[in-house]
Length: 392
Image 1 (tube, helix red, strand yellow):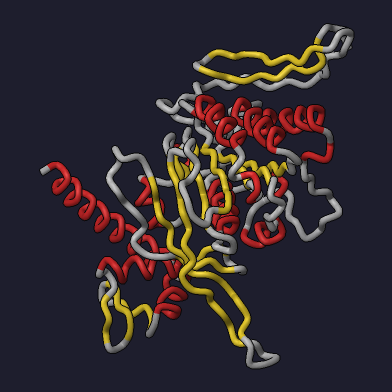
Image 2 (tube, rainbow, N blue to C red; image 1 turned 60 degrees about the vertical axis):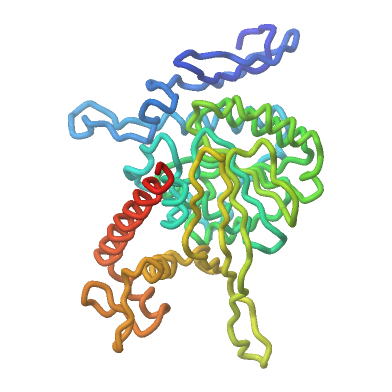
């Protein structure tokens, strides 16, 4: 190992060029770690570097292509441990037998969307034009116990479902990662950091963005940091790093009243409507089982106002009840018809009520796809009529 004047070398990419960040230390040693160069441009006007499989996998003597971001994220883990100490990363060990380590999600066509990360919530995706915008700072706010961290964890799950990579900076220490695992999040393919101060969380976010290997970075902030001027200054400094990149930055914070983060380009404000309860078998008291919330979208004045048409139901067991959201959207759009036999869709009786119809929809993938296509077509027709009224 050669003796040089640098201790660590960190590579990042911008505009098809590779740069190096070096932390100097006289007489230090360069660790034998490195980041493999990407073969594609990482700007938003090109197709992003999604996980690929080699087209020559069936040819003798060839090896399948490896996702270059996996090695770069492993290098990034080592860099963060060296920079901030081993306590900054939450690492899952082999002793956790209940966790499946090698759970891989096959990438779908949605991962090739260079502008947005889909959330699997059809109403929210349609309202945002495809999902959480890449290369933008999104604020996810709401009063305490409004489902902010549940929705943030669901965004991580949705990112992994399309073959993407996510990081969670849990400065508030309020995320339940066991619950994320029950929803299907692979914790071994998930970078979790536990920063101890505001400068540390901002520096971690900066390094994660410069690595250019993640699709989603979540900053979960404690309530007493929301009013500090250092937060606004730090987020304003992160915005230029987001420009042109494929990473979506989501800041989670408590917000009871007052304006949101000035640096945020998109704001998702959660309003709790109803607490869902189940009968307690041990007595007459009721046990909470979920929450029904409405998502308010606040964006730039140049964008037309658009919000999800129906609330969503957050569940402790499922995260978000997707089938029930589709049923509510179809009822709001007039696609589902009330019949004496129950809720009917194209002469097919789904069930006597919303719950039964959601269960039938979840068990029939073909019916699910057909209903989604009808909802998207209905949404496009409504958006076209709204645009015509705005231009008149």
